Every structure is written in structure tokens, then in C-alpha cells.
Amino acid sequence: MTEITTSYPYTLEVEPNPRAKDTWQWAIRKHGKLVQRSDRAKPSEAKARVQGTEQIEKLIHGGGEERR
Image (cartoon, rainbow, N blue to C red; front, side):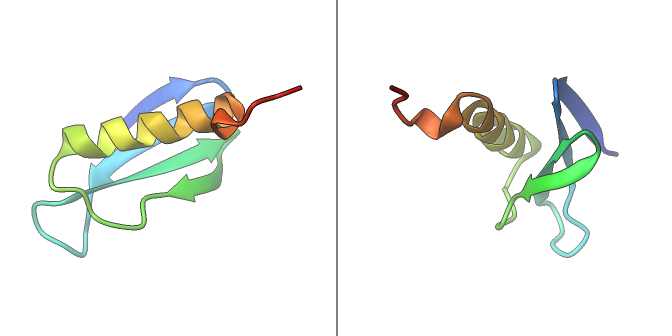
């Protein structure tokens, strides 16, 4: 089952990895278009969700770079 979380304009999709049993993957979409996805399978849904959420925060806040 795919779990979707929205943080406008980004959407986080967390789903079981079809290639590796008992692992999870995430994908971030902006207005429906793929922006980023996990490069490695995560051992749990919770870990995949946390990492995906962290990546959205980086996208929203500019990757932690200082702005002048």
C-alpha cells in the first residue's frame, strides 16, 4: 500500500520496495512530477518516511544553505 503525505507543493510517497522483500522506498513529487527518490531501500516504513520528510524540509528551506 502506498502512503502519501502532502507538504505543498511537495508530495511524499512511501511504499514497499518491489525488488527487495521487507524494505521500503520513498519518492518526492512536486505538482505530480518526480523530484527525488530514495537511492537505497530502508528497513522500515518509519525510517523511509523520516528520511523522505527530511528531504522535503531541505527542499523547502533551501538545503540548509545560508541566504544573504
